[in-house]
Length: 412
Image 1 (cartoon, rainbow, N blue to C red):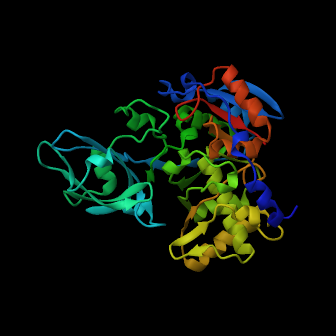
Image 2: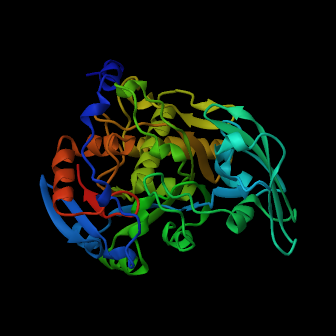
Image 3: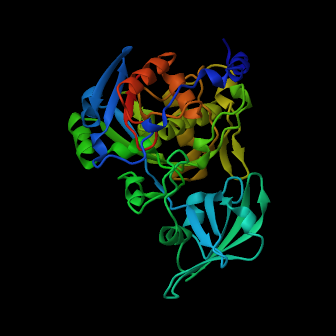
């Protein structure tokens, strides 16, 4: 089957075939006291094994390259109160503009324009919203510019001016827990909803598979001879967007910004052993890297006015033969050489659904995902029809689900 004939069949998949019953009491509202005390479901060679997360290394071969997302969650929920007592919550989703570098915007100041969701927006008719520190040393103002799609453009300004917007959010914001965790965010979520290797500000949702890792687990991986690599993909709120259309082809996939160093791409080009992404965000980035490189080999231009952009369905319509992994990575390295860059930055809208042909991923560490979500579709693409058996087993064996829940290690 050629790729050009493949795309219509993929788009005709029905989202209703990728759902299951998830009781509310199976959704983990809080993390475990010890991150690595989570359970680990291992699916390999068509068999399921129940294990502890601390045993991860025992299921992987030496010289495996395990890839982590080092993005850092920003405290993106801001709570304002009007003089009337009305509470208005602003959820900062991404900087205004299509491909604006979220990390660069967060490091700047003393003003910034963002696309936001606004809770209780009808109470915000005009004028600024203000957060004022009691001692007068800090002031944040929010000005509503205009409605935009299902949200608003909001201008933020603050004093003192030397603070970055990331620092402003850290001072005033709350952790953007996902919508299925219905409790209010607590102070300790600032720590528990962050991986231990988080370093680059930009996400409004955690790469949750990484939440299980501790220094103890990392040392066990090193002792087994398992290599570690890092990339950055800033997770957007669109990761929670359900598939509401009948057919998958009608679903609009959100774009997310990524950054990968030249040194890491060189490592990918040379690595001959298995590659295991930690989380769907890492998988999505690795697979996107392949298709961007493959497009360069094929002479397909993915440059936009704001940088590289991989469209949602690009891999399914790829013309001709796929290049091998090293060739695609070398194309990326050649591009960086020509542009005199030390890192590859871009945005991916890649959707991974059943029928997708994996190019970079040999196993996947991930959590258990929402029914009918694009993340569950990704799992189904990787494990085939076995995803139903895996999820049925997890429910039967009392695994904890979603962001603060347990994990699984999946082999194709």
